Structures are given as structure tokens and as C-alpha cells.
Length: 222
Image (cartoon, rainbow, N blue to C red):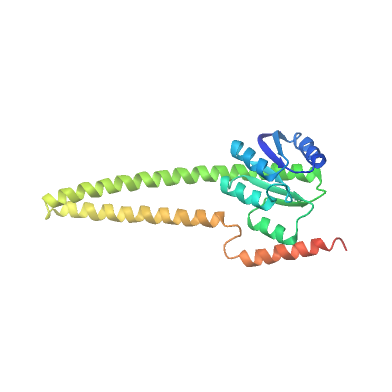
């Protein structure tokens, strides 16, 4: 049993009931919504780590729901299950980092397996975010202390401009500040790359590969 919350967004009551019943065997708590607006409201209340989403919904299109979820909490893992998704929808979902994309009728066993794997991905992202926050906090504190040190050294140098030790200390603090700022800049670049929908340098090839797989899938089995 996964100790977490999943939000099921499906307008067909029979399909929704079937999915909810299956998911309750795997996930501690299952919430449900029958339209896009209700889904966003529920998500803002709980920030569900897992979301199972249909694309054709009343009141708000599923892709717009997906974008709103991404803005609210990028760590949450979204699994799309749809019977009306086009190839363009699938590619757009892939670019938005959907965890899995299923066509209806989806195998309930496959869906349960995807939920387990998606939750592991959520935990990994949460841990990464916590480490990133700790790293940023440490760098911010070091930067603050270095600015304080430089301010104090500047004031002392005004009263004793020929003091070589003060000059050396000032240069040393400036060099340390540059190092800290370089580390912070590198951390921000790495985090930005990790959040990109597609791997760095592989965007076009990954997109073309996804489209080709979708084209083959749309033809059905040979």
C-alpha cells in the first residue's frame, strides 16, 4: 500500500468508479473529480503527489488542467488515461513531462504498476528539491556573511588605508565571494536543465522519436 494521495480526474462515472476501486488496492487515499475546474480546486487543497487525468473534460480541457498542475507543483506525477487523445496531445503531454500516457481502455494492472513507479519518482524529486533548498540556504548564508565581512573591512581600511593585512583580507574575501557566486550560478543552471521537458541536446531527436512511436502505435498491430 502506497501511503499517499491520488487524484482521479475522469468525467465518465463508470470508468471513474472502476479506476478508483482499482487504485484503492494500491494507494491509501483516492480523491476524484468529474471536471477540470473541480480537479484544480481539489489539487490546490491537497497537492496530490499522483494524478490520473483524462484529456477530454468538461469546464476545462485536460491539457490545460495539466499545465495548471505543473505550475502548482512540478513534483506531482501525472498519468494520462484518455480515449480521445490525438498524436499532438501525446507529444504535448510528453513535453510537459507526463509520467505515462495510456489509451483507453487501460489495463488496471498496468495502471497500478505506473502509480507505484510514479510515486517513487515523486519521492526522488521531493528529496532533490529538499537538497537543493538546503544548498541554496547554505550559499545564501555564506554570501550574507561575506558581504558583512567586506563591509567591515572597507570601514577599517578607510581609517587605515595603508594596512597591508586589511588589503589581503579584503581580496581574500572578494575571491571567496566570487567562488560562492560561481557555485550558486552552476547550481541554478543544473536545476534549470533538470526541469527541462526533454534532455539537454536531445530535444528534437526525442520529440521525433515520440512522434514516430505514436505513428506506429496508431496503425495498430501488424
